[in-house]
Image (cartoon, rainbow, N blue to C red):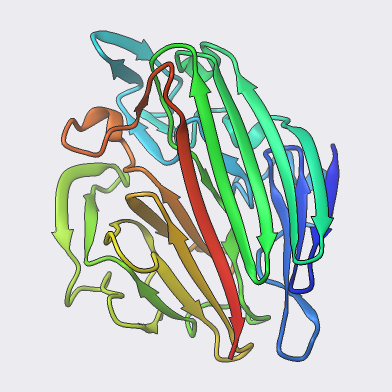
Length: 301
């Protein structure tokens, strides 16, 4: 397993070739010290059996697909599933594959790591050879995560990063203040599969239109993003660190795990989109380029 570290004056990023995992992201706080802002494991080998997808690139399709098959055009493709659900690309999705670290560099205010992975036709049941490129770039106080992909035959693609953010040393995130750039969410059933209904969040437990404390609610919730403004803003009064998330994607899955402190902002297409014709399209065809770009920007207050 390979590990590389790049940094600038404000951020330090550690990346593994296994799963293209962000093992470490440190931000220089108001006292001038680098502090970890993602949940990670010290030993790289501890990621091999990690069920939480800590810091990983998940794909070929992030989130859940129901029914154990894909329809692309007039063809159906069976995909591995557990009780009718395929999660994060299957048993061995992109977060459990070895990527190639193509380059890593640092030059003053900018530093980056570039990785690549080619998913062969039929891997985890998905059609098409998918050539994927992933760029992690530090510029000032911002981490850019850019996924790009091309295919040799029609397929579906939906990639995201699965880092758990933690802005202070507390064993809880209940006191974090959160604002989301969304007034709507996808309704999900008891198995967290979309029903197809889009619900207004105003006045509900899922309403973070105005900044407020997260509290005791546990989220595993797909939000429909507004076209303008940041997708999310997260702030810890204890550390004074504020993080803003911006993306070109239509949805944001916000996940707070039950067993440790952290929060995921999974910027992506709609979950289970292959099974809903009225959801934004997730198909990729030869000659097209898939691009998912997300910015995580940090400040001290």
